[in-house]
Image 1 (cartoon, rainbow over the protein chains, first blue to last red):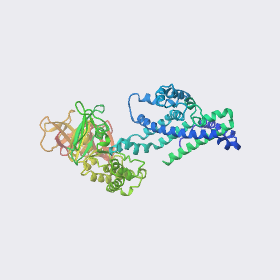
Image 2 (image 1 turned 45 degrees about the horizontal axis):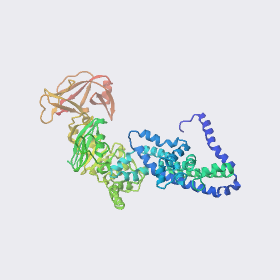
Image 3 (image 1 turned 90 degrees about the vertical axis):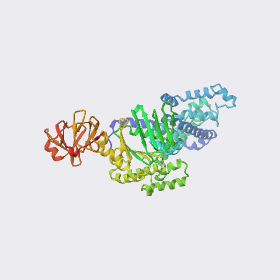
Image 4 (image 1 turned 60 degrees about the vertical axis):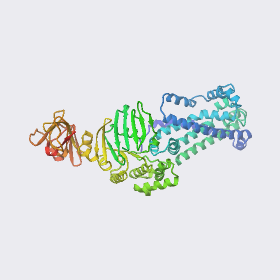
Length: 258
Length: 351
């Protein structure tokens, strides 16, 4: 028997858990079950669902592509300004998403920082599916970086030093030692990023707008339906909850299998 | 010389130089913080000296300093395999893949790397454990796999950092024999705390203290005629260092030791060393005079049990007495006593 907990701890713990779980119960209770099937298979619902899935997957891939090297630099290098850089990279974590969306708009939008250059190349990003993916990547990347940097620091460099002394170059060490050692952290980081991308709303609507089939993801669809067809909004909300639960379950499975 | 190192690492107060001949195993001894690990880190390319130069088998690995080219060969291209206190087997690979890691990194095809790996595992006596994950190996087995892994990389120089320090006493002798066998004709540096390792594994010894080489020679020479306090402690000997005056070794504190001079007697005023075993010391409560004896007036600083004896420390000198003697003499810390040693029990040689 480990050291006991103070008994009073249970009261706030139970209140907190109820606070998180009760709204989920309320959603389930509110669902109009007889028409659930038709509500979630309407054309606009399906379009939003697949758009969300595709863009979130793409955003997660981008997070891995750019987040893994960023985490490596943050965890393995030491230079002046590293602390400041880390704080800036993690800024989207605390920034209101709508501010992030505005920032993206003023960078990649037609009148933005890079807008005229992109325009000259015939590229228009704002209010496109690419903008959705960019908005999601912007807000989700810090989740991957934080969890992977922690995993890298915990794993330490001892195995990497041994591997190098056995003749393995930096890329071989990264591929055969570092990645396998931090795989659990990488997976949970990617899952968190995916979940964050799936739920992204503020930056998306600001930077990408709400065009059905092109930029209207599931959260945007739910927000719009809430006014015109609350039953559809609730049904879609439940779909999002189910996807979230599946993602968490999958992540747990993957982690314990390693 | 196949390996030469000279390195200054100012922030660690290290300034050393030593060499290892082709096929020779060098033991690096010294107290904690004496620079042993720094020497290995500089050799492996993990720490950059300034200035410093490392040459291995004709290749310049490090050459840093004013007017030097600033060469820094990265760790993976130095051909200096590391084996530490802990095996550090890659946890996601089985024993065979761990050993095959070096050859595969050097571009050997998978199947022949695995064949090599099996041969090295057989060589160190754990061939039947090839399919095991590191978590399924005992400490001794894991360290054997780690030895095989280091050898399989076919390094020009093997770096062993206290390879036996973390092992169970029960598996120690067998693994020491294995190391002795595989190190016999290899060029290697072994950092160790253990006199037995130095004697059995190494041809030559360097002793470090405060980041400097204070003594070097063949293992037998250093351990039988130590010149540094650390080597004397390793060899289990008392050491009195001073100058040769009127047929005895006189220390700065005025202590005088007489003994049997080995070889040519030192010249008057020359540095000299006297050593004797703690078991050759008799302890008395009262001052005793008598020839041919050495009498040291000392204050007891520590008393510790040592197998079936009691070791009495008085600053840098030690005496081993029986439990009965310690009880009869009512020995305690702070007591003034006399350490008596027969001159025939004391070896004297030039410093």
